[in-house]
Image 1 (cartoon, rainbow, N blue to C red):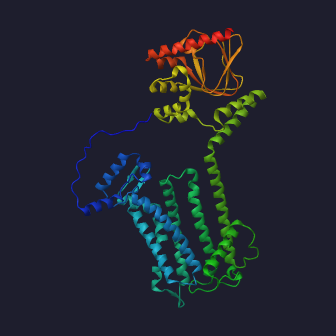
Image 2: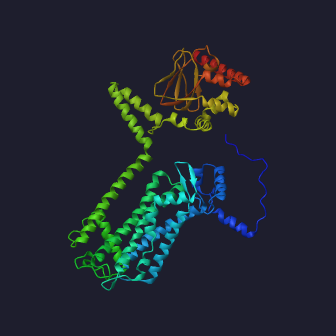
Image 3: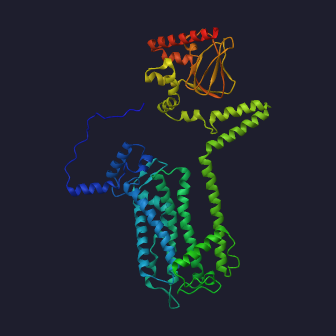
Length: 528
Protein backbone atom coordinates (compact mmCIF):
# COMPACT_ATOMS: atom_id res chain seq x y z
CA UNK A 1 0.00 0.00 0.00
CA UNK A 2 1.39 3.37 -1.01
CA UNK A 3 1.41 6.04 1.69
CA UNK A 4 1.78 9.78 1.32
CA UNK A 5 4.74 11.31 3.11
CA UNK A 6 4.54 14.53 5.09
CA UNK A 7 8.03 15.55 6.09
CA UNK A 8 8.25 16.65 9.73
CA UNK A 9 11.99 17.35 9.83
CA UNK A 10 13.07 20.93 10.29
CA UNK A 11 14.97 22.54 7.48
CA UNK A 12 18.68 22.91 8.25
CA UNK A 13 19.56 25.13 5.32
CA UNK A 14 21.25 28.37 6.17
CA UNK A 15 19.26 31.55 5.62
CA UNK A 16 19.83 33.19 2.24
CA UNK A 17 21.71 36.49 2.62
CA UNK A 18 19.99 39.65 1.50
CA UNK A 19 20.28 40.27 -2.25
CA UNK A 20 19.52 43.33 -4.27
CA UNK A 21 16.83 43.31 -6.94
CA UNK A 22 19.48 43.20 -9.66
CA UNK A 23 21.12 40.17 -8.04
CA UNK A 24 17.76 38.42 -7.89
CA UNK A 25 17.23 39.06 -11.61
CA UNK A 26 20.69 37.71 -12.38
CA UNK A 27 20.01 34.61 -10.28
CA UNK A 28 16.69 33.95 -12.05
CA UNK A 29 18.38 34.45 -15.42
CA UNK A 30 21.14 31.96 -14.58
CA UNK A 31 18.59 29.36 -13.46
CA UNK A 32 17.23 28.93 -16.98
CA UNK A 33 20.68 27.74 -18.12
CA UNK A 34 21.08 25.22 -15.26
CA UNK A 35 19.70 21.70 -14.83
CA UNK A 36 16.00 21.85 -14.06
CA UNK A 37 13.49 19.41 -12.63
CA UNK A 38 11.02 20.70 -15.25
CA UNK A 39 13.10 19.18 -18.03
CA UNK A 40 11.97 15.55 -18.61
CA UNK A 41 15.43 14.57 -19.88
CA UNK A 42 16.89 15.52 -16.49
CA UNK A 43 14.73 12.91 -14.77
CA UNK A 44 15.50 10.36 -17.48
CA UNK A 45 19.29 10.58 -17.14
CA UNK A 46 19.90 11.96 -13.64
CA UNK A 47 17.22 9.69 -12.10
CA UNK A 48 16.34 11.65 -8.94
CA UNK A 49 15.91 15.10 -7.44
CA UNK A 50 19.11 15.04 -5.40
CA UNK A 51 21.20 14.31 -8.52
CA UNK A 52 19.67 17.35 -10.23
CA UNK A 53 20.48 19.52 -7.20
CA UNK A 54 24.05 18.21 -7.26
CA UNK A 55 24.31 19.13 -10.96
CA UNK A 56 23.30 22.68 -10.09
CA UNK A 57 25.98 22.89 -7.42
CA UNK A 58 28.66 21.62 -9.78
CA UNK A 59 27.47 24.04 -12.44
CA UNK A 60 27.72 27.01 -10.08
CA UNK A 61 31.13 25.87 -8.89
CA UNK A 62 32.67 25.23 -12.32
CA UNK A 63 31.98 26.32 -15.90
CA UNK A 64 29.20 28.74 -15.03
CA UNK A 65 29.06 30.08 -18.60
CA UNK A 66 28.35 26.63 -20.09
CA UNK A 67 24.69 25.81 -20.85
CA UNK A 68 23.46 22.66 -19.16
CA UNK A 69 21.97 20.12 -21.63
CA UNK A 70 19.05 19.49 -19.24
CA UNK A 71 18.19 23.14 -18.68
CA UNK A 72 14.92 24.89 -19.46
CA UNK A 73 16.69 27.06 -22.01
CA UNK A 74 18.01 24.06 -23.93
CA UNK A 75 14.61 22.35 -23.86
CA UNK A 76 12.80 25.33 -25.37
CA UNK A 77 15.64 26.22 -27.73
CA UNK A 78 15.53 22.71 -29.25
CA UNK A 79 11.82 23.08 -29.82
CA UNK A 80 12.11 26.57 -31.32
CA UNK A 81 15.09 25.73 -33.53
CA UNK A 82 13.13 22.84 -35.08
CA UNK A 83 10.41 25.30 -36.11
CA UNK A 84 13.07 27.70 -37.38
CA UNK A 85 14.93 25.02 -39.36
CA UNK A 86 11.67 23.81 -40.87
CA UNK A 87 10.96 27.35 -42.07
CA UNK A 88 14.48 27.87 -43.45
CA UNK A 89 14.61 24.48 -45.16
CA UNK A 90 11.38 25.37 -46.96
CA UNK A 91 12.08 29.03 -47.70
CA UNK A 92 15.71 29.02 -48.89
CA UNK A 93 15.43 26.42 -51.70
CA UNK A 94 12.13 27.95 -52.87
CA UNK A 95 13.77 31.37 -53.20
CA UNK A 96 16.88 29.91 -54.87
CA UNK A 97 14.80 28.08 -57.50
CA UNK A 98 11.54 29.88 -58.23
CA UNK A 99 12.66 33.43 -57.43
CA UNK A 100 15.83 33.02 -59.44
CA UNK A 101 14.73 35.53 -62.13
CA UNK A 102 12.48 37.59 -59.85
CA UNK A 103 14.95 38.95 -57.32
CA UNK A 104 13.41 40.69 -54.31
CA UNK A 105 15.46 42.48 -51.67
CA UNK A 106 13.01 41.56 -48.88
CA UNK A 107 13.54 37.85 -49.55
CA UNK A 108 17.28 38.32 -49.21
CA UNK A 109 16.80 39.94 -45.80
CA UNK A 110 14.61 37.06 -44.63
CA UNK A 111 17.12 34.47 -45.84
CA UNK A 112 20.04 36.10 -44.07
CA UNK A 113 18.00 36.46 -40.89
CA UNK A 114 17.25 32.72 -40.96
CA UNK A 115 20.93 31.93 -41.50
CA UNK A 116 21.90 34.27 -38.65
CA UNK A 117 19.69 32.26 -36.27
CA UNK A 118 21.35 29.10 -37.53
CA UNK A 119 24.76 30.62 -36.78
CA UNK A 120 23.53 31.47 -33.29
CA UNK A 121 22.50 27.83 -32.88
CA UNK A 122 26.03 26.74 -33.82
CA UNK A 123 27.40 29.07 -31.16
CA UNK A 124 25.04 27.65 -28.52
CA UNK A 125 26.07 24.13 -29.45
CA UNK A 126 29.71 25.00 -28.79
CA UNK A 127 28.88 26.12 -25.22
CA UNK A 128 26.26 23.46 -24.34
CA UNK A 129 27.31 20.43 -22.30
CA UNK A 130 26.41 16.89 -23.24
CA UNK A 131 25.57 13.64 -21.48
CA UNK A 132 28.38 11.11 -21.75
CA UNK A 133 26.61 7.73 -21.83
CA UNK A 134 29.87 5.79 -21.48
CA UNK A 135 30.73 7.57 -18.22
CA UNK A 136 27.12 8.07 -17.11
CA UNK A 137 27.53 11.77 -16.32
CA UNK A 138 27.08 15.23 -17.79
CA UNK A 139 30.23 16.73 -19.31
CA UNK A 140 30.50 20.52 -18.82
CA UNK A 141 34.20 21.21 -19.50
CA UNK A 142 34.37 23.56 -22.50
CA UNK A 143 37.36 21.85 -24.09
CA UNK A 144 35.61 18.47 -24.10
CA UNK A 145 32.27 20.02 -25.08
CA UNK A 146 33.77 21.78 -28.11
CA UNK A 147 35.76 18.70 -29.09
CA UNK A 148 32.65 16.54 -28.87
CA UNK A 149 30.67 18.95 -31.06
CA UNK A 150 33.51 19.21 -33.59
CA UNK A 151 33.64 15.43 -33.91
CA UNK A 152 29.86 15.03 -34.22
CA UNK A 153 28.04 17.59 -36.40
CA UNK A 154 29.89 20.90 -36.36
CA UNK A 155 31.07 20.70 -40.00
CA UNK A 156 27.64 20.18 -41.63
CA UNK A 157 26.11 22.72 -39.21
CA UNK A 158 28.67 25.38 -40.13
CA UNK A 159 28.36 24.70 -43.86
CA UNK A 160 24.56 24.76 -43.68
CA UNK A 161 24.51 27.98 -41.64
CA UNK A 162 27.13 29.95 -43.59
CA UNK A 163 25.69 33.20 -45.07
CA UNK A 164 26.86 32.66 -48.65
CA UNK A 165 25.75 36.13 -49.75
CA UNK A 166 28.80 37.54 -47.94
CA UNK A 167 31.08 35.84 -50.45
CA UNK A 168 29.37 37.56 -53.38
CA UNK A 169 29.51 41.08 -51.91
CA UNK A 170 32.74 41.59 -53.89
CA UNK A 171 30.71 41.20 -57.12
CA UNK A 172 32.78 38.49 -58.76
CA UNK A 173 32.27 38.31 -62.53
CA UNK A 174 32.92 35.93 -65.43
CA UNK A 175 33.33 37.57 -68.83
CA UNK A 176 31.90 40.76 -67.36
CA UNK A 177 28.74 39.05 -66.08
CA UNK A 178 27.80 38.83 -62.36
CA UNK A 179 27.44 35.36 -60.86
CA UNK A 180 23.72 35.62 -60.06
CA UNK A 181 22.90 31.96 -60.70
CA UNK A 182 25.94 30.75 -58.76
CA UNK A 183 24.95 32.96 -55.83
CA UNK A 184 21.49 31.39 -55.72
CA UNK A 185 22.98 27.93 -56.15
CA UNK A 186 25.44 28.46 -53.26
CA UNK A 187 22.55 29.12 -50.86
CA UNK A 188 21.52 25.47 -51.33
CA UNK A 189 24.38 24.56 -48.97
CA UNK A 190 21.72 24.99 -46.32
CA UNK A 191 20.72 21.36 -47.04
CA UNK A 192 23.50 20.30 -44.62
CA UNK A 193 21.29 21.48 -41.75
CA UNK A 194 18.95 18.56 -42.36
CA UNK A 195 21.30 16.36 -40.32
CA UNK A 196 20.99 18.56 -37.24
CA UNK A 197 17.23 18.76 -37.84
CA UNK A 198 17.06 15.00 -37.50
CA UNK A 199 19.11 15.18 -34.27
CA UNK A 200 16.80 17.84 -32.83
CA UNK A 201 13.73 15.78 -33.71
CA UNK A 202 15.23 12.83 -31.86
CA UNK A 203 15.96 15.01 -28.83
CA UNK A 204 12.47 16.56 -28.74
CA UNK A 205 10.84 13.14 -29.15
CA UNK A 206 12.91 11.91 -26.22
CA UNK A 207 12.04 14.99 -24.15
CA UNK A 208 8.31 14.64 -24.66
CA UNK A 209 8.46 10.84 -24.26
CA UNK A 210 7.25 9.83 -27.72
CA UNK A 211 6.78 6.06 -27.73
CA UNK A 212 9.43 4.08 -29.65
CA UNK A 213 6.76 2.70 -31.96
CA UNK A 214 5.88 6.17 -33.24
CA UNK A 215 9.38 7.58 -32.95
CA UNK A 216 10.33 6.74 -36.54
CA UNK A 217 7.11 8.28 -37.89
CA UNK A 218 7.69 11.38 -35.76
CA UNK A 219 11.09 11.89 -37.43
CA UNK A 220 10.46 10.44 -40.89
CA UNK A 221 7.33 12.29 -42.00
CA UNK A 222 8.61 15.88 -41.55
CA UNK A 223 12.00 14.98 -43.06
CA UNK A 224 10.30 13.33 -46.03
CA UNK A 225 8.21 16.46 -46.64
CA UNK A 226 11.33 18.65 -46.53
CA UNK A 227 13.23 16.34 -48.88
CA UNK A 228 10.30 16.27 -51.32
CA UNK A 229 10.27 20.06 -51.28
CA UNK A 230 14.02 20.21 -52.01
CA UNK A 231 13.70 17.70 -54.85
CA UNK A 232 10.98 19.83 -56.42
CA UNK A 233 13.21 22.88 -56.24
CA UNK A 234 16.22 20.98 -57.65
CA UNK A 235 14.06 19.67 -60.52
CA UNK A 236 13.46 23.27 -61.52
CA UNK A 237 16.91 24.71 -60.89
CA UNK A 238 18.98 22.05 -62.73
CA UNK A 239 17.87 23.09 -66.28
CA UNK A 240 18.51 26.73 -65.36
CA UNK A 241 22.02 26.04 -64.04
CA UNK A 242 22.87 24.02 -67.15
CA UNK A 243 22.21 27.15 -69.23
CA UNK A 244 24.43 29.56 -67.29
CA UNK A 245 26.06 30.12 -63.89
CA UNK A 246 26.32 33.87 -64.33
CA UNK A 247 23.34 35.76 -65.71
CA UNK A 248 19.95 34.13 -65.51
CA UNK A 249 18.87 32.77 -68.90
CA UNK A 250 15.89 30.81 -70.05
CA UNK A 251 16.53 27.05 -70.34
CA UNK A 252 16.97 25.37 -73.72
CA UNK A 253 13.80 24.76 -75.77
CA UNK A 254 13.90 20.99 -75.13
CA UNK A 255 13.76 21.44 -71.35
CA UNK A 256 10.60 20.36 -69.55
CA UNK A 257 10.19 23.94 -68.29
CA UNK A 258 9.77 25.35 -71.81
CA UNK A 259 7.74 22.37 -72.99
CA UNK A 260 5.12 23.23 -70.37
CA UNK A 261 5.42 27.01 -70.79
CA UNK A 262 6.36 27.61 -67.15
CA UNK A 263 9.19 30.13 -67.49
CA UNK A 264 6.90 33.15 -67.48
CA UNK A 265 4.49 31.76 -64.89
CA UNK A 266 4.41 32.96 -61.28
CA UNK A 267 6.59 31.32 -58.66
CA UNK A 268 3.70 29.43 -57.07
CA UNK A 269 2.46 28.05 -60.40
CA UNK A 270 5.97 26.94 -61.32
CA UNK A 271 6.44 25.34 -57.89
CA UNK A 272 3.24 23.28 -58.06
CA UNK A 273 4.10 22.10 -61.57
CA UNK A 274 7.58 21.07 -60.36
CA UNK A 275 6.12 19.36 -57.29
CA UNK A 276 3.66 17.37 -59.40
CA UNK A 277 6.45 16.36 -61.76
CA UNK A 278 8.65 15.26 -58.85
CA UNK A 279 5.89 13.19 -57.25
CA UNK A 280 5.12 11.64 -60.65
CA UNK A 281 8.73 10.59 -61.09
CA UNK A 282 9.02 9.24 -57.55
CA UNK A 283 5.83 7.18 -57.89
CA UNK A 284 6.72 6.07 -61.45
CA UNK A 285 3.22 6.70 -62.72
CA UNK A 286 4.38 6.79 -66.38
CA UNK A 287 3.01 10.27 -67.09
CA UNK A 288 6.43 11.58 -68.17
CA UNK A 289 6.84 9.36 -71.27
CA UNK A 290 8.62 11.14 -74.18
CA UNK A 291 9.23 14.28 -72.10
CA UNK A 292 12.91 13.81 -71.26
CA UNK A 293 14.57 15.38 -74.29
CA UNK A 294 17.64 16.86 -72.57
CA UNK A 295 20.44 15.04 -70.78
CA UNK A 296 19.95 16.95 -67.53
CA UNK A 297 16.28 15.97 -67.40
CA UNK A 298 17.23 12.32 -67.84
CA UNK A 299 19.82 12.53 -65.06
CA UNK A 300 17.33 14.15 -62.71
CA UNK A 301 14.75 11.44 -63.40
CA UNK A 302 17.31 8.71 -62.79
CA UNK A 303 18.36 10.25 -59.47
CA UNK A 304 14.78 10.78 -58.31
CA UNK A 305 13.72 7.23 -59.15
CA UNK A 306 16.77 5.83 -57.36
CA UNK A 307 15.86 7.94 -54.35
CA UNK A 308 12.26 6.66 -54.48
CA UNK A 309 13.53 3.07 -54.26
CA UNK A 310 15.52 3.93 -51.12
CA UNK A 311 12.51 5.65 -49.55
CA UNK A 312 10.27 2.68 -50.35
CA UNK A 313 12.75 0.25 -48.78
CA UNK A 314 12.95 2.45 -45.68
CA UNK A 315 9.17 2.69 -45.36
CA UNK A 316 8.75 -1.08 -45.68
CA UNK A 317 11.51 -1.83 -43.16
CA UNK A 318 10.17 0.72 -40.68
CA UNK A 319 6.61 -0.57 -41.09
CA UNK A 320 7.80 -4.11 -40.39
CA UNK A 321 9.79 -2.91 -37.38
CA UNK A 322 6.79 -0.95 -36.08
CA UNK A 323 4.47 -3.93 -36.56
CA UNK A 324 6.91 -6.23 -34.81
CA UNK A 325 7.31 -3.80 -31.90
CA UNK A 326 3.57 -3.37 -31.43
CA UNK A 327 2.77 -7.06 -31.86
CA UNK A 328 5.85 -8.73 -30.40
CA UNK A 329 3.86 -10.72 -27.83
CA UNK A 330 1.41 -11.98 -30.48
CA UNK A 331 4.26 -12.95 -32.79
CA UNK A 332 6.00 -14.80 -29.94
CA UNK A 333 2.74 -16.61 -29.20
CA UNK A 334 2.37 -17.68 -32.83
CA UNK A 335 5.97 -18.92 -32.88
CA UNK A 336 5.44 -20.84 -29.64
CA UNK A 337 2.25 -22.45 -30.95
CA UNK A 338 4.06 -23.42 -34.16
CA UNK A 339 6.75 -25.14 -32.10
CA UNK A 340 4.06 -26.85 -30.03
CA UNK A 341 2.33 -28.18 -33.14
CA UNK A 342 5.59 -29.59 -34.50
CA UNK A 343 6.28 -31.19 -31.12
CA UNK A 344 2.83 -32.81 -30.99
CA UNK A 345 3.17 -34.16 -34.53
CA UNK A 346 6.62 -35.51 -33.63
CA UNK A 347 5.08 -37.36 -30.65
CA UNK A 348 2.15 -38.61 -32.79
CA UNK A 349 -0.45 -37.29 -30.38
CA UNK A 350 -4.11 -37.76 -31.22
CA UNK A 351 -6.16 -34.89 -32.65
CA UNK A 352 -8.12 -34.65 -29.41
CA UNK A 353 -4.93 -34.27 -27.38
CA UNK A 354 -3.60 -31.69 -29.82
CA UNK A 355 -6.80 -29.64 -29.54
CA UNK A 356 -6.58 -29.77 -25.74
CA UNK A 357 -2.98 -28.54 -25.81
CA UNK A 358 -3.89 -25.67 -28.12
CA UNK A 359 -6.91 -24.77 -25.98
CA UNK A 360 -4.71 -24.67 -22.90
CA UNK A 361 -2.17 -22.36 -24.53
CA UNK A 362 -4.85 -20.07 -25.92
CA UNK A 363 -6.56 -19.72 -22.52
CA UNK A 364 -3.31 -19.45 -20.57
CA UNK A 365 -1.68 -16.74 -22.69
CA UNK A 366 -4.72 -15.13 -24.40
CA UNK A 367 -2.85 -15.23 -27.74
CA UNK A 368 0.00 -13.16 -26.26
CA UNK A 369 3.13 -14.94 -25.09
CA UNK A 370 5.19 -13.56 -22.23
CA UNK A 371 7.62 -14.94 -19.68
CA UNK A 372 5.96 -14.04 -16.40
CA UNK A 373 8.75 -15.39 -14.21
CA UNK A 374 11.36 -13.22 -15.96
CA UNK A 375 9.15 -10.14 -15.78
CA UNK A 376 8.45 -10.60 -12.07
CA UNK A 377 12.13 -11.32 -11.45
CA UNK A 378 13.16 -7.87 -12.70
CA UNK A 379 10.85 -5.82 -10.46
CA UNK A 380 10.92 -5.10 -6.73
CA UNK A 381 9.15 -7.13 -4.05
CA UNK A 382 6.71 -4.28 -3.46
CA UNK A 383 5.69 -4.21 -7.12
CA UNK A 384 5.27 -7.99 -7.20
CA UNK A 385 2.96 -7.77 -4.20
CA UNK A 386 0.93 -5.03 -5.87
CA UNK A 387 0.48 -7.17 -9.01
CA UNK A 388 -0.62 -10.21 -7.00
CA UNK A 389 -2.96 -8.18 -4.83
CA UNK A 390 -4.55 -6.68 -7.93
CA UNK A 391 -5.06 -10.14 -9.48
CA UNK A 392 -6.10 -12.13 -6.40
CA UNK A 393 -7.36 -9.82 -3.67
CA UNK A 394 -11.02 -10.10 -4.68
CA UNK A 395 -10.72 -13.88 -4.60
CA UNK A 396 -9.36 -13.93 -1.06
CA UNK A 397 -11.79 -11.30 0.15
CA UNK A 398 -14.74 -13.41 -1.10
CA UNK A 399 -13.65 -16.38 1.04
CA UNK A 400 -15.60 -16.49 4.31
CA UNK A 401 -12.80 -17.42 6.69
CA UNK A 402 -10.49 -14.75 5.19
CA UNK A 403 -12.89 -11.93 6.03
CA UNK A 404 -11.52 -9.13 8.24
CA UNK A 405 -7.94 -10.36 8.03
CA UNK A 406 -5.21 -7.77 8.59
CA UNK A 407 -3.86 -6.26 5.38
CA UNK A 408 -0.35 -7.56 6.10
CA UNK A 409 -1.55 -11.13 6.58
CA UNK A 410 -3.79 -10.95 3.52
CA UNK A 411 -0.85 -9.74 1.43
CA UNK A 412 1.32 -12.61 2.62
CA UNK A 413 -1.40 -15.15 1.76
CA UNK A 414 -1.86 -13.68 -1.69
CA UNK A 415 1.89 -13.95 -2.25
CA UNK A 416 1.65 -17.72 -1.75
CA UNK A 417 -1.05 -18.31 -4.39
CA UNK A 418 -0.05 -20.38 -7.45
CA UNK A 419 -2.05 -19.96 -10.72
CA UNK A 420 -3.19 -23.12 -12.53
CA UNK A 421 -5.36 -23.73 -15.61
CA UNK A 422 -7.66 -26.77 -15.98
CA UNK A 423 -9.43 -27.79 -19.18
CA UNK A 424 -12.98 -29.09 -19.53
CA UNK A 425 -13.50 -32.47 -17.75
CA UNK A 426 -10.14 -32.27 -15.96
CA UNK A 427 -10.27 -33.76 -12.46
CA UNK A 428 -8.95 -31.11 -10.10
CA UNK A 429 -9.47 -32.92 -6.78
CA UNK A 430 -10.25 -36.63 -6.39
CA UNK A 431 -12.22 -38.10 -3.47
CA UNK A 432 -10.45 -40.33 -0.92
CA UNK A 433 -7.10 -38.80 -1.86
CA UNK A 434 -4.91 -36.98 0.69
CA UNK A 435 -5.37 -33.23 0.57
CA UNK A 436 -2.57 -30.71 0.95
CA UNK A 437 -3.98 -27.57 -0.67
CA UNK A 438 -7.12 -25.55 -1.39
CA UNK A 439 -8.26 -23.73 -4.54
CA UNK A 440 -9.81 -20.37 -5.38
CA UNK A 441 -11.79 -20.00 -8.63
CA UNK A 442 -10.75 -16.96 -10.66
CA UNK A 443 -12.77 -17.79 -13.78
CA UNK A 444 -14.83 -20.81 -14.78
CA UNK A 445 -17.20 -23.34 -13.26
CA UNK A 446 -16.48 -26.59 -11.40
CA UNK A 447 -18.79 -29.46 -10.40
CA UNK A 448 -18.62 -31.05 -6.91
CA UNK A 449 -19.28 -34.81 -6.64
CA UNK A 450 -19.64 -36.66 -3.34
CA UNK A 451 -18.10 -40.00 -2.35
CA UNK A 452 -21.08 -41.84 -3.86
CA UNK A 453 -20.70 -40.01 -7.19
CA UNK A 454 -23.72 -37.78 -6.61
CA UNK A 455 -23.37 -34.26 -8.01
CA UNK A 456 -23.71 -31.90 -5.06
CA UNK A 457 -23.38 -28.42 -6.59
CA UNK A 458 -21.56 -26.10 -8.98
CA UNK A 459 -19.06 -23.47 -7.89
CA UNK A 460 -18.29 -20.40 -10.01
CA UNK A 461 -16.08 -17.31 -10.02
CA UNK A 462 -14.97 -16.21 -6.55
CA UNK A 463 -15.78 -19.53 -4.85
CA UNK A 464 -13.31 -21.86 -3.17
CA UNK A 465 -12.97 -25.55 -2.24
CA UNK A 466 -10.57 -27.90 -0.47
CA UNK A 467 -10.22 -25.75 2.66
CA UNK A 468 -10.64 -28.80 4.91
CA UNK A 469 -7.13 -29.92 3.91
CA UNK A 470 -5.77 -26.72 5.41
CA UNK A 471 -6.91 -27.45 8.99
CA UNK A 472 -7.31 -31.26 9.01
CA UNK A 473 -4.02 -32.69 7.71
CA UNK A 474 -4.94 -36.35 8.13
CA UNK A 475 -8.36 -36.02 6.54
CA UNK A 476 -8.90 -37.34 3.01
CA UNK A 477 -10.86 -35.54 0.36
CA UNK A 478 -14.60 -36.01 0.73
CA UNK A 479 -15.49 -34.85 -2.79
CA UNK A 480 -14.31 -34.98 -6.37
CA UNK A 481 -14.04 -31.66 -8.22
CA UNK A 482 -14.25 -31.62 -12.03
CA UNK A 483 -13.88 -28.63 -14.36
CA UNK A 484 -17.13 -28.00 -16.26
CA UNK A 485 -15.35 -25.54 -18.56
CA UNK A 486 -11.87 -24.11 -18.90
CA UNK A 487 -11.03 -22.76 -15.44
CA UNK A 488 -8.33 -20.54 -14.01
CA UNK A 489 -7.68 -21.40 -10.37
CA UNK A 490 -5.28 -20.28 -7.66
CA UNK A 491 -3.81 -22.94 -5.41
CA UNK A 492 -2.72 -22.38 -1.80
CA UNK A 493 -0.45 -25.03 -0.29
CA UNK A 494 -1.06 -26.08 3.32
CA UNK A 495 2.59 -25.68 4.28
CA UNK A 496 2.63 -22.10 3.03
CA UNK A 497 -0.67 -21.37 4.71
CA UNK A 498 0.46 -22.79 8.07
CA UNK A 499 3.70 -20.86 7.98
CA UNK A 500 1.80 -17.65 7.25
CA UNK A 501 -1.02 -18.07 9.79
CA UNK A 502 1.17 -19.44 12.62
CA UNK A 503 1.71 -16.05 14.36
CA UNK A 504 -2.10 -15.55 14.59
CA UNK A 505 -3.57 -18.29 16.90
CA UNK A 506 -6.98 -16.58 17.27
CA UNK A 507 -7.44 -16.44 13.52
CA UNK A 508 -6.32 -20.05 13.23
CA UNK A 509 -9.08 -21.21 15.57
CA UNK A 510 -11.74 -19.23 13.70
CA UNK A 511 -10.63 -20.62 10.34
CA UNK A 512 -10.58 -24.15 11.72
CA UNK A 513 -14.13 -23.80 13.06
CA UNK A 514 -15.49 -22.61 9.70
CA UNK A 515 -13.72 -25.42 7.81
CA UNK A 516 -15.03 -28.14 10.14
CA UNK A 517 -18.60 -26.84 9.79
CA UNK A 518 -18.37 -26.90 6.01
CA UNK A 519 -16.86 -30.40 6.07
CA UNK A 520 -19.77 -31.72 8.14
CA UNK A 521 -22.28 -30.03 5.88
CA UNK A 522 -20.76 -31.68 2.80
CA UNK A 523 -20.92 -35.14 4.41
CA UNK A 524 -24.56 -34.61 5.35
CA UNK A 525 -25.57 -33.63 1.81
CA UNK A 526 -23.69 -36.59 0.33
CA UNK A 527 -25.39 -39.01 2.77
CA UNK A 528 -28.81 -37.98 1.50
